[in-house]
Image 1: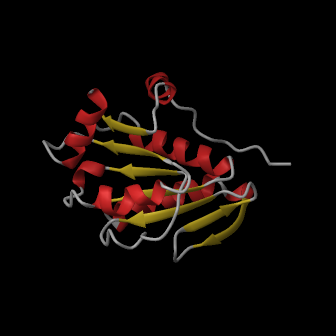
Image 2: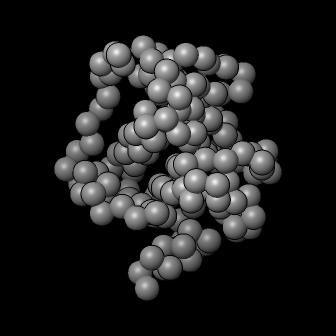
Length: 165
């Protein structure tokens, strides 16, 4: 039996975005809207279902608070945790890996059911999505959440435009 977890409940606007979700989702909102909270919700949901999922942040420093929060939330159902590798396995069979994109090639070779890319518009290399991240979703035909504050016209702007057509 899985112990009860005390997970944050998405607020009404987040619930609306989650309900309207597709395979690839670009969420561009101002600061304090709760993009990171919603991203953690999506990540944890996939891992609870028994899938491998991953969180991507632009820098290690941005990744650390999310790692600590998810680690604490999932402690009652964690079967294995690697602090150095920022990796959690759950008793459900799911797993979560946390990646800094300071070296965008590092996650090559992995496979995920879902990825959450926090502050995606901060990433400068437009080739990271098609060449590194997108192939990680192939085996599961997995999904992605791009969470960010607005940052002009960059690769994320182009991805957002694809969803409008």
